[in-house]
Image (cartoon, rainbow, N blue to C red; front, top):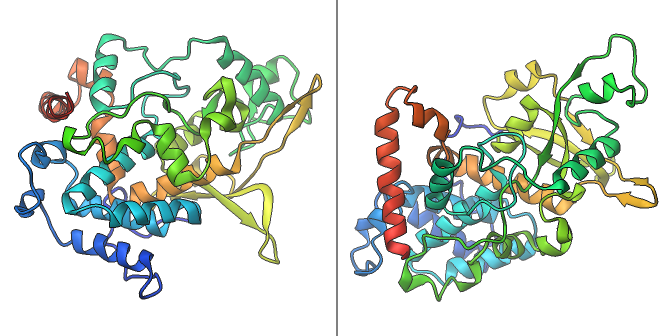
Length: 380
């Protein structure tokens, strides 16, 4: 299953699919109206001296912002999340819709996006500015440092039968240690990692909201608050003291599918039986348009089934379906709106930029620093 548009380029909002006269219909129409504008400075009557959207949102045009919110309405993970987004859209003027879209991209969608590799840290800051500074100061900022990561690794390997959930390939260390069950002769074994579904910190403040709008968007101070509002669940209660290092938020994967999942190019949707009922802990593998050949080359299965197991009297839970569902919603919104490319631009590989090995790397770094500096100045 794939999105029927060019990779990362986004697509226009379709016709209004919500019942005429409903609040959903009205909110969606506001998004379609915003989509007709190409620059924030067109809203002369709405601009304020302390709200320089040309600086804050110069990489997120009204078109992208409108599509983030519009596709958010279409692909909301549940009714409560859609209702919350409807209320927020209807309470905003046109420029405030830009702030709302910014919060959804950099406050919510980005916690599922991990451009730096297999295992995230649980504490890096949330804003593009702080992420850039942390990467410059410490190239290993996203490497795990707690014993919880090692415990999680053992738990997910046991629960996932020492195999990549996407391919069925056996974890190489488990194979060499002879602890993987049901191993056929000639079975392939490769290195695996813990793949986190929420892969960035949900506790720290979201930067970048203009001072004049901070009171209005006080509810959106952290990614955890964004998750609760749109996802309909309290991530801290679901994950407990383990934070991100909880089996409910992780599974075992080899490098390629893990990379696709972390970059929102691959996601999971609930599988249905012949009667149209959801099959517990079973998901169809979906991907962004253009990834079909790569998915086949990586031997990724069309369907994934998780399980819970009991080890030493303690249950190791399957990944939480609400977290999987929210990841899928964010992946679809990111690709269909064009925000996926925006995230890639902000979180491009800092190591590659630092050594200036990529064409135009100096230009990209200068542009990123200027953009992020404007966000920092506005938020301070």
